[in-house]
Length: 338
Image (tube, rainbow, N blue to C red; front, side):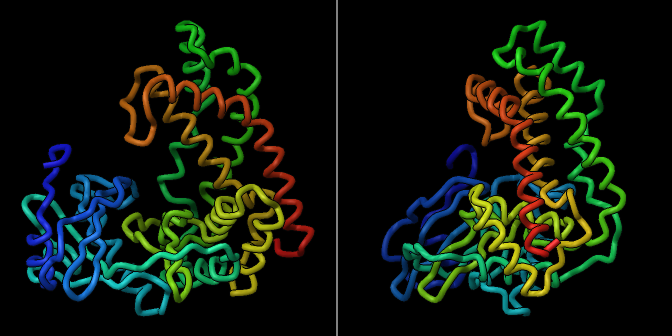
């Protein structure tokens, strides 16, 4: 057992997925959204994933398997369309698709992808791959999904939080007054788009640098468990912002590749990077709730001192961040992409 979650032996995994004899034990690889291990066998290596009871996405439903059912169905579409992605292994006794129970825990296995150091530019691949994913399942719906709404707290809620912070003399209380007008203005922009965004698609949901594995044959998009719906253009801009690492030229390069592959940016206009703003607002709200004792800390947040420091950092940098995003939008418009 590890953290009250079952950890199988290498032999149990090999038996459950019909693999050859293990040549050693499971080697723990990473604990992030799930536990992952490397499993070596006499005929090859495999990536083993053991799930936590919940994962962060919009289709959780009553059970973890509700989210994974949606995710695996979408993953099948991606494989059929030729998206660069890992090869799953079918278990001997599946609970659903590529998923099985070992002990009381859900597991999946993929063929191991040998990593290599990559010092090139993935902009063209990333832009094309986002378009491929966004074209898999367009929904024809208007309006942003519900998971956007936690970023849109009322002015009364923010006032209440900041008053409580002053009463408790938190380390970040002195930053509240100057930041509040910027928070409310950004919230208003997000709120205005909630009901009118026109390009809702099902998407991978977790385009992050750690989910792009560079194999000898090129980049591969991994970890399809967090499938959700989103605006195609707003996700593309946020992904470009993440991978561009705050470099306007690199961000523009990714978005140029997205447009050249068939993606469209035009409707968003000045709100192109609004999903970046939404993310900042939502993280800030979640961490403030924890700091004020209104909710428990998520696994990624750290200890109370770390949370308070993160809140101070977000508050202090929020006005400048909004200005920076406006300048980025202008640079994209100047290229004629939006």
